[in-house]
Image 1 (tube, rainbow, N blue to C red):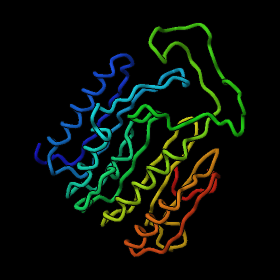
Image 2: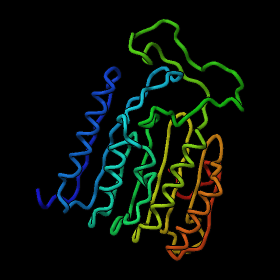
Image 3: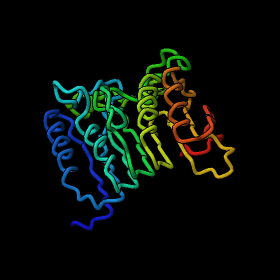
Length: 263
């Protein structure tokens, strides 16, 4: 398959009991990425990690012990730097090391990537939920829907349980910071998106397709709350935008009807 130009996968991680099995499966898939021919120009993967039905449950981490981050995320960090890869679309449970690891990466660069699109699952590899209880608006309301009769003995699957939610600002800021760091090394990028559509909506989008140069180059969108990027994250993004020779124009909003790129 030396002429393979496009790869699309639809996978599901529905394992709810054996955490070690989940880790082995993700590690094996990470190793598979190295075997994909260099002729590939477009990669698309839906690798859905099914969340627990009971949202008050804290899932176990699927990051191997002794590792500083998720192996699959780190593998994608390397994979997306292939010369010749133009488009990368991913919907999965990944952490921010897919964009930029904790340690310095002096040689990292994305020589050909034009579209980098990530959609985050409800639960990160660490077991953290992207969505959290929205106490500010709903106080100590316990739930919207609950069934007190257990339907399963699997932890987290006993019954359906959810509650009013917003998203974890610190998690999104971590992704935004990492995205800004890698953007400065993406020579040809037109779109860089990190979205989450769960019990709340949030995302960042970098886009250079506006020929009139009146739209923002960076958009940070959230509902029910607007994102609150840290000063450190904004500085990283300002430097990244400057490295592309673009004017600093940013849109931060909680109005989903007033967005330019978020979908």
